[in-house]
Length: 82
Image (cartoon, rainbow, N blue to C red; front, top):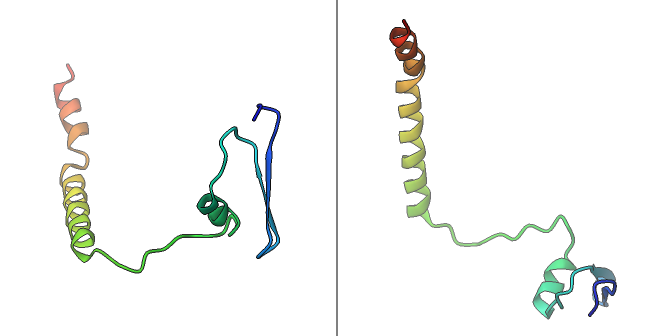
């Protein structure tokens, strides 16, 4: 396919049109996802509770460190100036 050609795919089930401007040929799964539209948001049914808890603990630690060290760099810079 040359750079000026484009692939036009019409999906009969929901009457959507996909225009592929790239040189890559889309497979059936890619066309299926694209035909769902721009507002389609894939979601997962399973939630990894361990990962969520781990992320929250990590975030909490970062927030506590930011709170603890807030403004300390400014004080050290002022003290080190002649």
